[in-house]
Image (tube, rainbow, N blue to C red; front, side, top):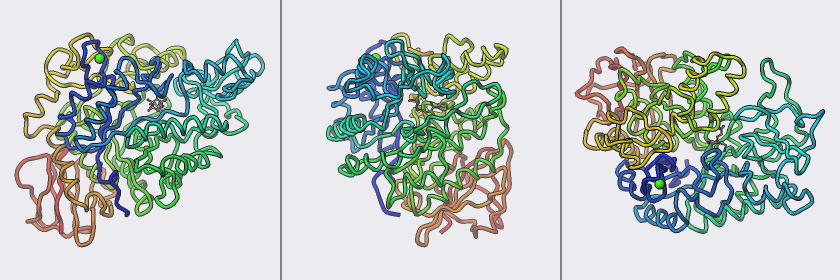
Length: 560
Ligand code: TEU
Ligand code: CA
């Protein structure tokens, strides 16, 4: 595959609100990020992706932007931003911004003007429709609950909002919208940012007729994914973005896409023709969900997880590049979902990292993941801050589910699981702030924190360091072909990476027990193979091609 800096990079996602508070107001900020750049660099990542830092009334923590050219007051100023960017570049790292252009805040000037004057410049910047039979224009639901339409008295019409009602969807059909957004993107790139993570970018083009969804039982407002994801003009819009803006800069792009399969993704990231570099899909994030009951835990099989990720590896191989992630600011913590939070937290956190980040693609690490941070399980709904969580609570309670079931669902699914403050030390509030944090800190900060782990050679943090350094210094782990082995094993995730005459074997045990696997059919193992990385200590047993793995053990061997 063609070489590129972003393929050789590992990305670290920062949720600025929860990263580090430099001035004691309880909210993370840009100076806080600057203060922690040494830590980030020590981890060995190459690129920082900042969740939105633009001006915002914070209905959805910055994913509702009221001015694309200003910095959120709580986070600092444009000067702070310039200082941050310079400090990042000085360290040889890069910085990627979040681009939220499916919607703006309802407090954005465009929307304020759009409400005032249907005939004016901004009249059609959003998706306005008359009501139907005294209700919304169609039966579409919003991601955060309820109808996707909000009535506006001033215009006597409804506007579409696929997320909260303070996040009206932009009308990408309008040439003015596209011009203004592309100008804004060029402005940030000219100012030195190195790329974009593009929020729900495949939702820009809606079905022109906005048809009703088929009625669903117990669901007055079904989600309209078939009519909003990968819509008829999406490729036209993204090709225009590439031609007019992205092609002029050596930047990287990763598009977050709901409802995308590897086949669909290829059209977005095909190296010859696609508009973007990478896609964040959700497929592996659904394996532990049972949608029939609120928060129902699904006992997933390792073979299901492997089949999903294998399909992405195989479909994109030689044609496009994967974005590899277990965590982000929307997902409950992966250690709590896919690892062994209680019995083998350290082992399983390391194993999860190695079996994903040594696949072909760019690793995306979310703040705190490198420490093995876990879900938080707040007991009271009042302790949750996320607009989606509050929406979920209302929806389930209204539907008549008992309080304890609703809370159990929220503890498992809430996006706030990822948004509790970064655990820096054993000091009060985990060293995140000297004030009162905007959201509670996970009480396990005394055991799980950066200060302790930087000292401890066998910590999760130091394993992540070694893992990234290993990937960095072995081209086979970046560009090498991917071949899964033992695909039917429910215990072990194993694959080979090969390039030229080189071959590396990665094998991780997902079980609480020791497992034995016979590698003979796939690879000739020699007892003296070089061990490149492991989360256990001491030499491992490797006789007659049989590999013995301790609970949650992962091994990385150089086979040839
Ligand atoms: O997320 C889109 C998205 O699909 C999620 O909101 C998802 O529905 C939810 O996390 C349930 O898993 C992006 C951003 O990452 C998210 O933070 C924003 O809230 C959302 O878009 C709207 O901008
Ligand atoms: Ca602050």
